[in-house]
Image 1: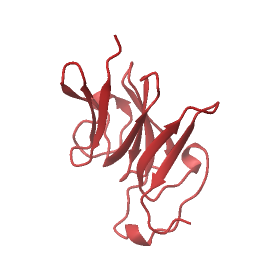
Image 2: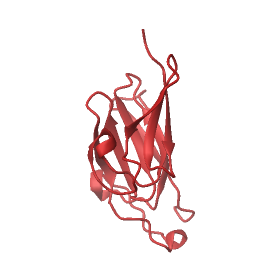
Image 3: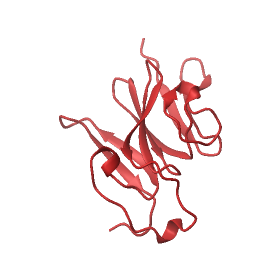
Image 4: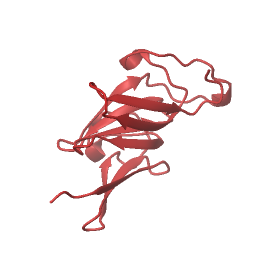
Length: 139
């Protein structure tokens, strides 16, 4: 039986939670609840303002747009491993709305002003992850 999951990023608690359809139980899959920047496993990791999530069709890998650390991270649903895959781990500065430095790139060569959403397209091989950046000055 396939268990459907509802995934949500909770900004104020700096966690990503899963809600099972069959049991109706919400549980943290990533983030300790304390803002920070730390890869790790499950709730031993630290996130800072997760905003958007996407999951692979096999429900094994979760992508998280992390606004305040300017990163895209993955959460391995089986092992709980949380790791950065794109962006540079810089906190969003106070002058956020004046940021114009965004850069295409692979891994930590990509630069985001503050990612707010992710959408995964598995129609191509390899799959494509689209990122919505929150800056008003991209273009």
